[in-house]
Image 1 (spheres, rainbow, N blue to C red):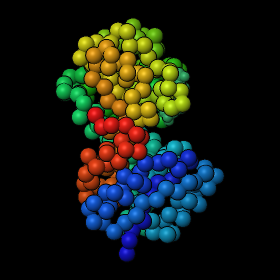
Image 2 (cartoon, rainbow, N blue to C red):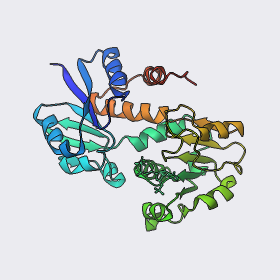
Image 3 (cartoon, helix red, strand yellow):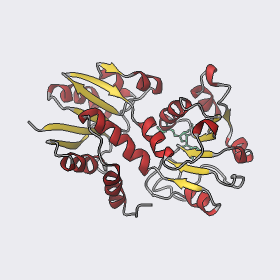
Amino acid sequence: MQKVYGVIGSPVRHSMSPAMHNDAFEHLGIPARYNAFHVEPKDLREAVLGMKALGIAGFNVTIPHKVAVMEYLDEIDAAALDIGAVNTVVNVDGRLIGFNTDGLGYLMSLKTAVKKPLAESAILMVGAGGAARGIFFTLLKESPRRLDICNRTLERAEKLILPDEKKVSKAITLGEAEKNLGVYDIIINTTSIGMSPKMDEIPLNLENLRQGAVVSDIIYNPLETRFLKEAALKGAATLNGVGMFVYQGALAFEKWTGKKPDIKRMETIVYNHLGGTQC
Ligand code: ATR
């Protein structure tokens, strides 16, 4: 019987996940279908119970349900518990198990762009919201030389950093980050600044950017944010959010099917959808 997968979110109409996963199922000859399900927050519990009752084989969870979904699952994997959010659910014999592939997806994408080992790198993250959490906890496991967080609201960045992590990680203001930008090898924007329709905004002034730095944005619409444009003008290597999106999807696909999808095909689908060309 054909298995059914999907994504729950609100809004979810423009999600690129159905096109990406359905192509991978077809390409690998797996009899399965992936659909987008619009679910309002008030209906989340019923939606998750419905997924279980209908025997949906697995699903992704997107904004705004990544945290709220956790209380309706039967089990949550340790990394997702650390991160405090779930983006992938696997139905194992009627038990719904939650995972988070966002952080690892980001890491896999980052590794395609950086040459220096992460253990020798000083990293600066901009933003301390939901998207920052998965990336922060995943990067920490790579034992970077530094992993600092700057945020408009300093206390939010301070809260993210546990006491044990204070040797490698410090919460700093946006102003401090701009002043000391030259110490960082990798700079990551995890905020929504620069995302369509607020495309003129920039999360951080890049004047003091070091030569040879890698500047990364988790935003993929537009493909090149103003942040990345300015970084490229200063000679930095840049990385947009397509890779993170593709790898988080590929990791979810592997958890559901045990098979590795073709990353290049997934990337091409996303670039075609966004009307850009692949770098
Ligand atoms: P998400 O789940 O997408 O990360 P979020 O939890 O609301 O969304 O976090 C958004 C992040 O973008 C936060 O770090 C936020 O800073 P604050 O903690 O100070 O709110 C940051 N952010 C959003 N708009 C911003 C702006 N105009 N200037 C500076 N930071 C902004």
